[in-house]
Amino acid sequence: MKRLVFFFAAMLCGVYVWAETVSPTEMGIRYYMPKTKVTLTVEYTETTFVPGKYAEWAEELLGVDNAIMEDSVAYTIGETYLTTETVADTSRCYIVHPEAGLKMQWLSLTRDGLLYGYNMPYAGGNERKRKQKDEKETTTTSIQPVSLLEETIKCDSLPCQARSVAKQIYQLRDNRIYLLSGDAENQPADGVSMKAILKEIDHQEQALVELFMGTEVKRKKHVDIAIDPAADMDSVVFCIGDDSIRVYVEPFGHHEAPAMETGKKSKPKKGTPVPSQIYFNQPGSTQIVVSSLYDTLLDEIIPVAQLGVSVPLSTDLFTENGGRMKIRFDIKTGNILSIYRPE
Image (cartoon, rainbow, N blue to C red; front, side, top):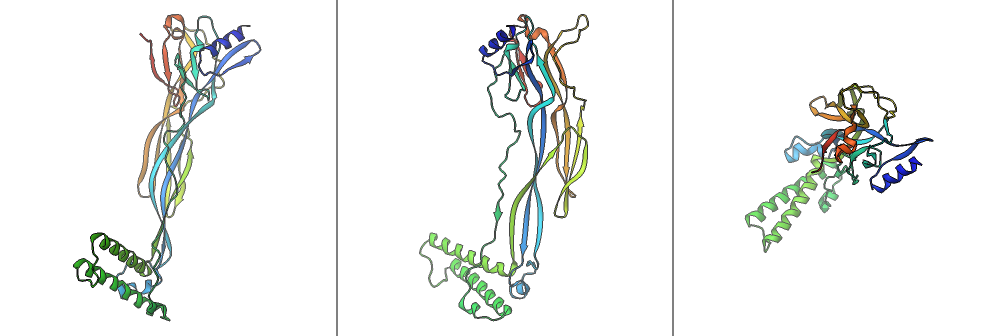
């Protein structure tokens, strides 16, 4: 009968709790300490270089010596960042048993069974992601060559075609000069028309120049790597082209997580506060360093819940003498965010 009364009282308080039977004769509220999961994201750009059809004659006909001469691929590392996610640590489970004088029906949990507050109803929300970023892959392509003049099409050899295309490039450049100087035979009537014509000349010139200089195709990509923040790590995790990404992980405050806790208290020494069945978590931390062969990409110290130590709160906070104390827990680390007694 006591089990039914306690469960009904918890529901009347309007808080979100996990109440479940732990034995045929008692009722308990089960909760977990949080666990931090870490994902490393490395963004990079893949650039594909394709030589132009007339690359061999670029220096001779256009006077340039930096044309792309062979197919190749290059990689450039961009932004590197960490994303954390909070989940329930099933290896650190606690059960609150009803006791005389304790107001455990005021305890609120998240939907995953993490401590949210005491005398502070859980309002929901997205507590999982520390950082969210759009990761769409984009492709930057070159301008497609415009149709060649009739003179070029009639050429039978590549050298002849190259000379004809080079002639078109110089004609486009001359036309631009005539327009800008006002010496063109058919000068545009207004600035809007002038701008449109110049834009088209630029477009055609770039397309023809690419037949000599070659093209570059850029693709933005990323790779996600799961990292255990509670484990020492110093190794190369993947390579990008001729570069490699090394990850160094050094956890602080490591401890052996206890097995399933029952919430039952050991007998305290005389004069010391009586520990309750409500534990908060003092998190540890981890330093994560990510580097390439040429540079340090990331160096962060982040809190890690599973490296922490569980500490019981005093029973006085949850009795009538506590004056309906309000306690707010950090659902990411398990630590206390605030604790006060309302006036």
